[in-house]
Image (cartoon, rainbow, N blue to C red; front, side):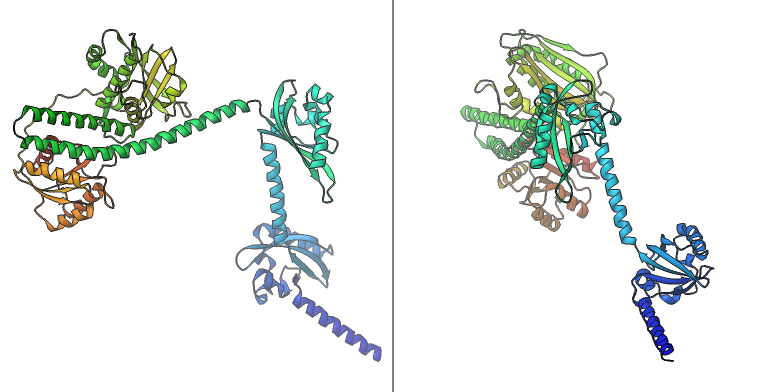
Amino acid sequence: MGNALAHVVALSNERRRADRLWSVSRDLMLIIDSDGIFRSVSPSWTRILGHPVEEAIGRHFSDFMHPDDIASSTEALRHALNDRELTNYENRLRAVDGTYHRLQWHTTKDDGLVYAYGRDVTERREVEEALTESREQFRRLVQGVTDYAIYMLDPEGHVSSWNEGARRITGYEPNEIIGQHYACFYTDEDREREEPCKALEIARMEGRFLADGWRVRKDGERFRASVVIDAIRDDDGRPIGFASVTRDITEREESQRQLERAREALFHSQKMEAIGQLTGGIAHDFNNLLMAVMSSLELLRKRLPADPVSERLLHNALEGAQRGATLTQRMLAFARRQELNVDSVDVAELLSGMNDLVQRSIGPEWPITTRFPLRLPAVHADANQLEMALLNLIVNARDATPAGGPIVIKGSCENVKAGSATGLAPGSYVRIEVRDKGTGMDSETVRRATEPFFTTKGVGKGTGLGLSMVHGMAQQLGGTFELVSDVGQGTSAILWLPVSDCEKTKPAAPAHEETPPVKSRLTILAVDDDPLIRMNTAAMLEDLGHDVIEAHSGSDALRKFKSRPDIDLLITDQAMPNMTGIQLIAEIEVLRPNMPIIIASGYGDGLEVPGREIERIGKPYDQRRLAEAIAKVMGAQVG
């Protein structure tokens, strides 16, 4: 009786332990019948998958199975029901958030039911898959590298792996080299000095061997190589082989020279950009000063009594100021900030029209010859600026040939491909070359020739802005300018200009149109942040008979415009702090659409107003140019 009681107690305790194991196990335990219906699932079902236990009991296992695993899991259940226990069988169950967990199952059968417990191996499989993928990626990476020979060596130096780069550089196929000693890559002299063994010994002792030296390809050709050999060690630090990386550096010196040239070109480009920004800023400020000087002198001329000496002095002052204005235009051209009237220009026709005048100007000692194909495309350019540029190049050619000599101007159409040494965007260009047989220039002079104010001419014989202007104009048009010269061999000045998409156009004869009548007295709002410019502009306008309201900023002008509905015309500077002239025009356009407006600026870019044409006058301007602009804009308004 006592033994029976003890047996009952033991059985009860075992059942309690089983129940406790069922409740606390982190692995999933379940009972499934022969129809695939869950009879019971442990609480870890909720922990792993998130579904309440009661939702699973009585449901078919396929309700929670990944669709791709249903067929194989049905077959696995059949095996389990036939007394074939499953071990490490994996499938995927859907969690409440829609993701799938991979479970690894072990089963046993009892009384027609399958008892299974499954461990969540999702994270482990993800890590294993990531590791496998990482290894495969690394293998593909190493195998796919073609610039480096990457291969493994066993402890004695025999090749055990071979990548594509090794095949390309040395010429050996994997089946030809794997198992061979790597000393076959060394020259006979190095093998006699036992350099391969020394390299492995250094790598074994110090962990790494680095050197540049001569190596031999399969066909016997020698090449210069940069070699790194790293010792590979096991977890206990014992060497188990070597990893060798070899790079063919035969052309490294040439590549280094190319790199130095690229760095020099970049430095030069950055320097020229900085000089251009500085030059543009100086030219803008200088324009403002010239504006004040020229307008004051013009107004003073009207007020001085008739006196030949005073008139001559005044004329000289105006002439000097005008020369200064020409200099600023060249500076702005170098900085690519002058206004260009771009059109389709026939270069051959342009040169033909100016040839006689230029020939007479430079003298018969420098005969000009032009060589152009019959059908040279028109270029995208400003005809006046291009004419000035060609004149500069011709005069420079004359000055470079003091004893006289031919000047040849050639034109051709060239197709530029991507990556061209000219640095031009791909497309069609007209190449204009002005060639002389003069003294030529050394490389340093050629390098600095397009810098502003650099000149090889004597003091007072050149400003150093001619080539700078040509360079800036070409860059602004989307082309480029280059010089090719050797001392004693003459110089070629080459201008590249983009081919025009439009038909060649001939300048139309000026139309003799009557200027529409303009109101004799206008109320004009004059805006400029420079008090000298503002004062002189107001003085010129008042001298023309107009009433002037002055404003020192965009916000000041806007405020006065709102309070004065009688304003007939706005004349504004562009470069002002806080609010530019274009921004001011946009504000006024909202208040009074189609308001007559003139914008005055020394710069030629950034002056567009979407949706309307704005009359522009360049600084410095005189009273006549100002009057013409007013007549034009007011005439258009009346029309």
